[in-house]
Image (tube, rainbow over all chains, first blue to last red):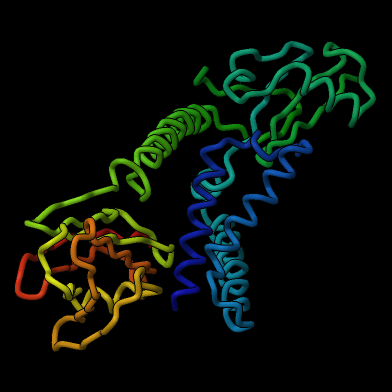
Length: 147
Length: 167
């Protein structure tokens, strides 16, 4: 019982922390983000397993995590509101070569990020060749080039 | 910025009012996170100035943490002024407390341990003329929540204290 409740608490806690950190936090991992992720995983693991190293405990924890994940995906499919609450919404951050400055600041994206993605995804050289840039819910940027 | 926009040909599920609220919540969350960190530094979650307590009752002085964490090592120190106890110092800890806080070690080790109905009595041989005797209990909380304990000298003063164990 303990393991399941603890896992659920950790799941919800992590969900809230990463939601508050914003979608840019772990979108497009840098090397350091990756290291950070490992350390977070390690810190979480200790709290989840404690000093119970049994296979039963491990499977209970895994089952709880996967179960919550499935449950949340079902809930998201049924309620648009909850989906937005959990996953956030996409945001257009550049229109017709013109960066939407205020939003970019608040979402913590700069022109360099957009240009980097434009080069990577579409081989685009300049901002004015972009029709739309969208900050997606997973924190990544997608680019739609002008024709 | 709260107006809905229409992008020609771009089918994107944008929701600016929601985005606005999200940003507000995000900033509020940062402030809450910062406050939690500051509270953590101050010791609200254990191990800081807010957490340390050292009440005194007669010759008995107790050092303990108000906030401790589930299954994290924790130390309770009892100090007894010299010349109170004669040759044998009889110190007891309430049994209900020791059921929730697993006792790992007592330093120095007691010469004798006696089981009384509601408490456990530890006896130490004290050399006359020594300084205050300090006894350290190394504990590991086994239950979360608010817990209270009592420590006392046999037939003498008693200190009651309260600890909160974070899960």
